[in-house]
Amino acid sequence: MNFKTIFKSFKNKDMLKRMLIVIGLLIMYRFLAHVPVPLGEPQTFQEAVQNFITRSDFGNFLNLISGGGLTAFSILLVGLSPYITSSIVVQLITKAIPRLEELSQDGETGRRKINQWTRVLTIPLAIIQSVAYIFILYQSVIASNTTIATAPTTADWLLSVTSMVAGSVILMWFGELITEQGIGNGISVIIFTSIISQLPTTLASLGASLFDTSEGSLSLFGWFNLPVNPTIFWIVFGFAIALLIVIYFLVKLNEAQRVITINYAKRVHGNSAYGGIKSILPLKLIAAGVVPVIFATAFLSLPALLGQFITTISPDNSFGSTLITLFTAPNANNFQQYYPTGITPQWFFYPAVYFILVVLFTYFYTSIIFNTKEIADNLQKQGAFIEGVRPGLQTANHLGKTITRLNLFGALSLGLIAMLPFLTDYIFIIISGAPIGLSISGTGLLIVVTVALENLRQLNSRALMVTYDEYK
Image (tube, rainbow, N blue to C red; front, side, top):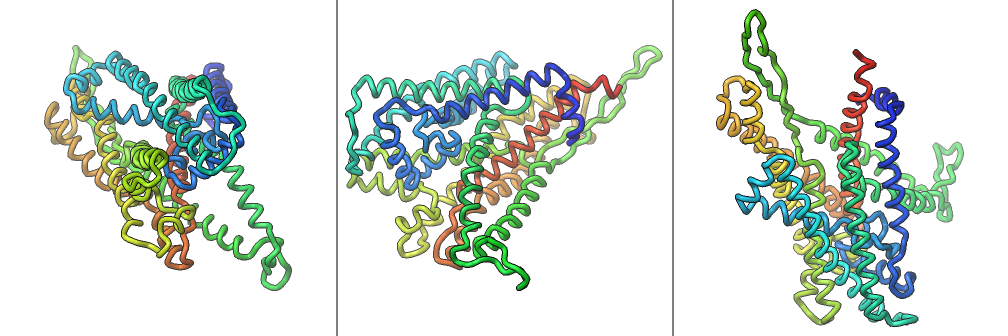
């Protein structure tokens, strides 16, 4: 990564324009994340949201990808969840129906049609989620015996749902506009910004605990006392070391790749010879990036939302309660509620399903973005081949076997990384009797590191393009 080249590229007007557009869109996104939904008293519903987040992993996920828009009860409350769900559904249907699979391989035109269907499907999903979510929150407010100044009318409900759907569509549009600038995947950049935007609040809370010396201060070799809480200091120090180690391995796994040498056939035309050169085809260990983790979290959170909806309508419904219990990530907030007697076999259900989904989505998404047949055909058209492998079908099979082996290790590694917060909680339960609660933080760290590396890579590539003439 050449940061000198990146900074030098900002002198280019086109590069500077692209960066300013991306920054402007992200600022607008953060502004919209604080525009409240026009329904009743925002403060009343914010209290209901806080209660919902502590009970529902889907609420945690929404709050993560909406950059705190959920806790602020903003028009971005639903966030990117409908678009992510729509992408999963369309890609599954595309793989299941041969005609649609052919359309997806039909160059830019086919991809545009598939993308348009994804956008269209996002709207009804956003409507359904908005209605369900507002209904759950409204019923939660009533169940908590909180007085609402004015009961929402039908027009209020329509306005609220419309504003939330519009917020979701605007967020999807922002993501596509950012992608068009060629500096990173727009959806990933927005989720990255969402996680980073919550960092100041976390650091402020941590700082308040760290400098709380009401229980004593830290003695440094008996020479003098530091004005910090000793217990919190050593916990923060330990986690800082662990964080650096995890980030190191995340970077190594994200950058790991298998290099395949490509040979180009030598051609003689008159007195001139062409070709006969070698190139490389890098195959990443985790080609799917962080997408499987996002997909798995969104997919696994939906049953909890359904259970929340059922129990809101019928509080005594055992099916809804079971869905909530099984599909809510075990963490510090709900440990006493769901596991009053300590760890039970039920504790391992969510982590196990989460691990399996991450592995499956890694294989699934890699098969979409890495089409071995298309790559083999392109190599054959260019007169290129892999040494010892026939062009065409055998090349496709060879690439397929290679990427499958890489996926085996890559998917298991990604699944284990996603499981780290649960393993940390398990260790702390054994030591102290209660989890420390890092489930979303672990997912967030994985997303931040992966997206940051990918965006830096794309930014570096574009910087090299605009500064190419200076190196000639």
